Image (tube, one colour):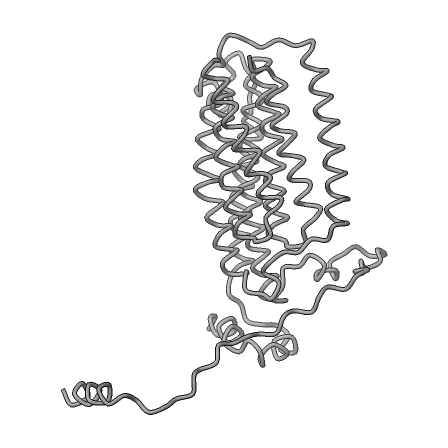
Length: 196
Length: 143
């Protein structure tokens, strides 16, 4: 038994088990927490695949940022009467059959693929070639300068758009808000009164 | 020995389970979490092929995917908050007004169960305060 094999078995088991938890849990909060463990396991798989930078970025961006964001979103919006999810057996059957068929297809395809393949023994080059290729320094590799810049502008645009969408704004149609004022007077007043 | 197939298998498991979650849920946040899981499966595939061929392309694509997924998460949360403010619901079936022109609305064959009535806590019937408490209260107010 190699150490890599043991590590891979553990990480794959953790990832798959918590992915089952995401798909099967009825509470949104529990699904988010299961997804947290899935992401951590996937980051470990990245480390095993030799992508240390991507694994670290995954831990920082997803586990540190996105999941905290998701938990905040769940906390804010999880107040309705249907906070517990209910899924009908028919929906389980349809989704399960579709996903099972897709999984069998992917597994057989990759089994056929690997029969003619090999596993490289030499490790991948480190982080610095990735950084150089992102910055357009073509050192025998490919240059990813244009996608890098596009993605950075995309991040900026998304930041501005998210701040614009989520800002506190005055209600436009008072009819829609008047309908809710009997039930949620507190929240409606908060939404209306923030912007002067 | 771990081969390429094992990593591809993990990616396929993640993608399949994310597909199950995406198809069976109606809550927008849960659908979003399942879509994130499918993205993770795709990134595992890219990285496995990249390390199989000894190239950096897989890692570069993976980094782009992680960046775009982070963007998607921020934008999706802002949209969820806006939708929740407007409609007090995150059911994806409630937002059929944004469907395309000419597409008939999806109607539930079996209607959803009625929401349970609010059980607000009721205060107990107020009675006489014990004497000790009254004495303490007076002392505090005098001081």
